[in-house]
Image (cartoon, rainbow, N blue to C red; front, side, top):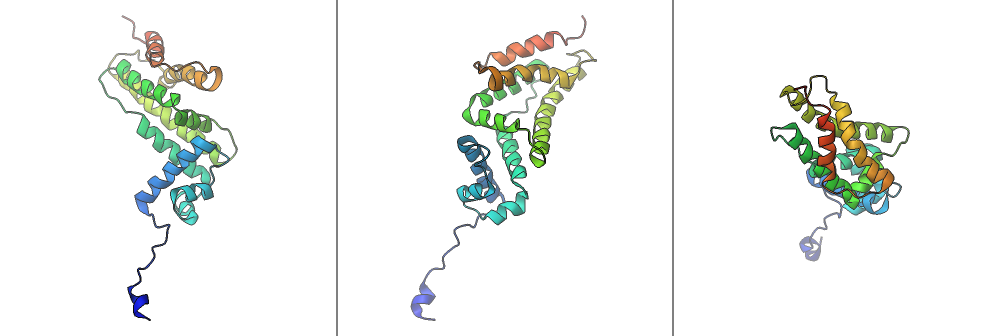
Length: 200
């Protein structure tokens, strides 16, 4: 070996991200591709190139494209939505659904919502169900607190109450295209809670 070869720096392979750094890079690239180019273009190969990681590393961690997509969805939603505990069911729901309204009004939120409602056979359909079930269960927990505190009638159905608030928000994004102003969520919540108060 020559002295030049001995002193020459060793080149680091360009794709060396591992662990949490790799995970965050891949999830961010997935969301960016979903938002800008849509579901069909969000392949493992495209995500790997955008994130600067080996494609085999992505498959090793997530196994399938569907698992990757829904991990990205869940992570982005977790970052955007609070888990409030204000002491009252109305304020808890207002904080959560106002944040959700803001999120849906962004290009990323709209794209992720549209992707989350795609119905396909197999893993993507299973992931879609699990994703939305987890989001609804978070809101249902807030309703159960309200029932336990006596703010809502004992017979209140948490799942139905949350659907009654969520439905109009989704309708505006997916069906009518009406604006999602921040006053909408509190108005819906007041309307739904009025019917769920315990008898005086």
